[in-house]
Length: 219
Ligand SMILES: [Zn+2]
Image (cartoon, rainbow, N blue to C red; front, top):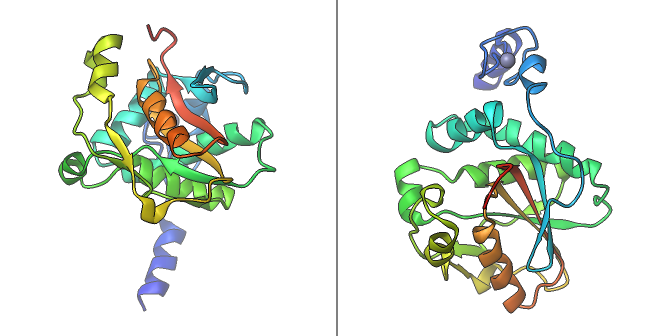
């Protein structure tokens, strides 16, 4: 009975664009708002600890609104929009012949208690559906409750994030596995740097990172 009701609701329910309220495209982001995103070319944005880091777009306008809504305002449904943006970009990189394990950047358990969820776990799950790659949200642990990074200068960020992560050996992927770290924003790259360092110390060599956005100036 509930299943039938759900199907009926899906038939009559039209998705509204989160950003402008338009119902025209029956999507959480309409084509007009989508066209306002400042996409970056499908190439390496930078290298961190010798790992290729790819960024989908500039952190401004729609992308800024999208991240904030998903991360802080409980708009969990927007995880599918982020995953879709990441996946379309990922496909354009032509790396998809490899099998990856998706690793979302974790948040500390206190933050998770406060926000009720880690938005990147939700994105990883959606990305996994699109890509058919497995995701692992238990392997990397956030063991230090760090301060919010955006108010800090580069040196303070490095200190803040130092030793913030650890691994759970119970959930270790095979060492030969290709790993795909996903995150929302890369600015100074200190978070990714710490995670990559940790993975390399544990014998992983096949790593790439994909993030939704980067500010055009990050120093
Ligand atoms: Zn719109």
